[in-house]
Amino acid sequence: MIKTDTEPARHTEADFARLAEDIKSWGRELGFQQIGIAATDLGAAEARLRAWLEQDRHGDMAYMQAHGQRRSRPQELLPGTLRVISARLDYLPPDATPARAALREPTIGYISRYALGRDYHKLVRRRLQRLAERIESAVGPFRHRVFSDSAPVLEKALAEKAGLGWTGKHTVLIHRRAGSWFFLGEIYTDLPLPADAPAQNHCGSCRACLDVCPTRAIVAPYQLDARRCISYLTIELRGAIPPELRPLIGNRIFGCDDCQLVCPWNRFARASAEPDFAPRHGLDAPKLIELFSWTEEAFLKRTEGSALRRAGYEGWLRNIAVALGNAPRDAGVVGALETRREHPSALVREHVQWALDRHAAKTAGA
Image 1 (cartoon, rainbow, N blue to C red):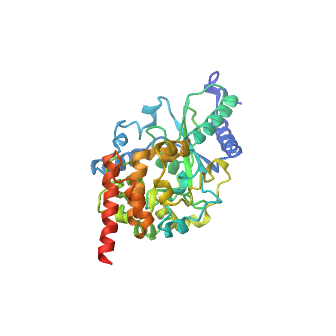
Image 2: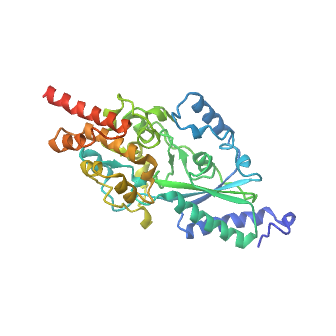
Image 3: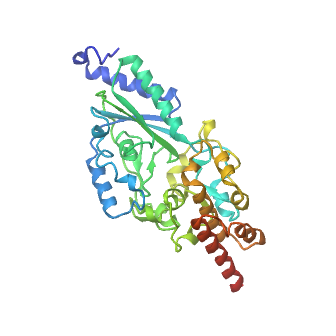
C-alpha cells in the first residue's frame, strides 16, 4: 500500500502503476465507463484556445478568457498538480423519443439529449469525490480536486491525452468503441501516476458533421464558431438571437445534437444505465405550445435539478418563440404567440414579434 504522506521516497514506478490500474478498476465499479490518466502539458491546446479567443469565436462567453492561463495550465489552478485522472460517463437515455423523430416534428420542441434528465455536474463530481476517497483510503492524504465542467479546465484536451477519445472535426470528443454521447470529469492530483497514451484521430476524410450543421457553425474541420452554434445561441447567449440565424434553428429550443447524430462512430454508442439521465416531464417530445404557456414558477419547478435552468426563463421563452415562428402556420401557434406579445421582457417581445411577422409573411405568400 502506498502512503504518500509518510515515505514518498520509497514509492517505485511499479507502485504507482499498480495504483493506476486500481483507480481504473474502482472507477468502473463506481459506474464510469472509462478512466484515463493524463500528463499536464497542454501547450498545443493552449495555442488553439488562444487563437479561438483572438478570433472572438467565443461570443459572449467572457468566462472562457477570464481565468488567464489557468484553464490550460493545471498547476496554476491547483498547485502541485502532476496528473489528471479523467473519467467518462455515458448519458444517452435509452427510453427517450428518438432524436431524429423529434427533429422531424416541427410542433415539438427539441432538447439536447444531455439535458433531458438530471443535471450531470453534481452527479459526476460526487462520484469523482467517492473515487478520490477510495484512493485516499489506499494511499493516505493527497492533494486533489474534482471537476466536471465546473472550473476553468480544458476537459476535452485532457481526456484526449488520457486516451478517452479524440477531438472530432465538430470539436466533440469521440471514442472509437463508444461514440460521443458521454460526460467528462476530472480529478487533479499530485500523485505521479503513469500517464496513458493519447487517443489517435479516426475521423479520416469524413465531413458529415460539417455538412449537417444547420447554421454552418463548424467553419472548418476542428474549428467551431460558437457565435453561430445553436447550442450557444439557445443556452449561453443572453441577448437576441441574430435574425438571420433564427429560421435555421428550426424546433431546437435547448442545444443541438445534429453533428453527433450523423457521426458514424455513434453507431457504437451505448444507452446509459443511469436512472438520473432518463427524460423528465416528457421533455423528450414536448409540445411547443404547452411549453410556451409555462409560467416562470412552472419553469422553475419543472427544471429543478436540470441543465435547462442555464437558459433562464426569458431565454426559454425566447427560444420557444423562435421555434413557434419556424412551425407551420396554425391558429393554435399564432394564438400562443399572441399571448406573449406584450410580455414584460423586451427580449421575449422581440422574438415573439419576429415569429408573428414570419407567420404573417407565410399567409401573404399563400
